[in-house]
Image (cartoon, rainbow, N blue to C red; front, side, top):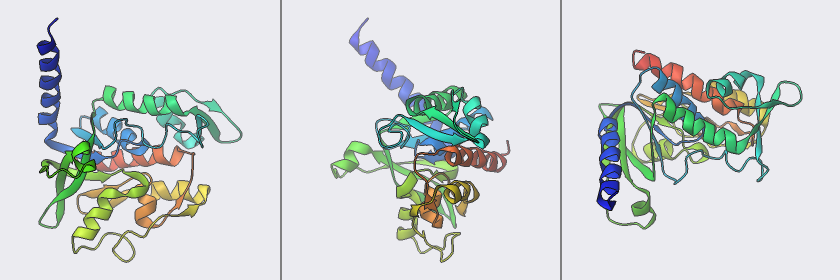
Length: 257
């Protein structure tokens, strides 16, 4: 065992994955629940899907459960997604299931990778590629360079579709809207902003508003609430999982799968 061989194994395999992702069918920005579900289902269908996460750990807001209590809740309607990713749950009250938050986060991450999605952490999407009125890819940089405001130029990835799965911050749609004179597929043509908590309509709206917000640019998960003015819902994740599943079906058609 030589240290240089360990280093070479890391670099060669990382670069091989990166080269395959430079021209993806779908780039999903944000490795939270909806992004991981969408990426897993798409990869399972043979779509070349890349998931980019700016933090060290994928999983989004799942890990902390509700205020640090390590369980989250889903509905019956989302049980099929849990089963598809081999994530255990236990019934709780009518139509509800309790899910260990750590098991859910780690299960979605492992499930997406096992199904064939490529996840890159510590990557920030700072801008989009836009050509002839359509989003065509992402402009990426290293998280640490961005955190420290280093003057490091980004690189790019091309994609047939880009997904904003960045959650409450809706980083991608917000940046795109502020930098370009465009009208989004929203009332008023701009992000509306997230409303206060109201769980039941929020869960339905997350799925309903999983859609194409501009040609080539899609939203899912909590990004939909910020973009379309939906309510927040707290530590119930069924809508997030179903949003990812809906998005996967939409983009599978776009990619001819």
